[in-house]
Length: 88
Image (tube, rainbow, N blue to C red; front, side, top):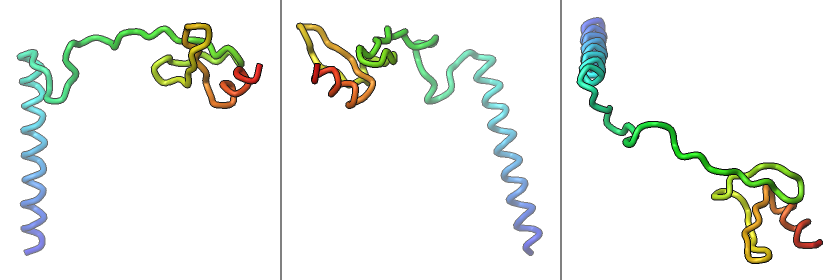
């Protein structure tokens, strides 16, 4: 009985694998994107990285620690660099 159950599970897994393979091949042939695939294609837009004024490490402005100094944003790689900059 256990052999039969394992055989049924194996057949089910093989059939599912085969169906997924056929689905991927058909999607590729028709040129339709897979569900959950990014739309718009290509690579994401480039972001100009900014140097930390204290240590020179380049940071992404959207994820960096920042302050406004002289009317312009200044980006830092860490809280330590920000504190060093503010103590000047």
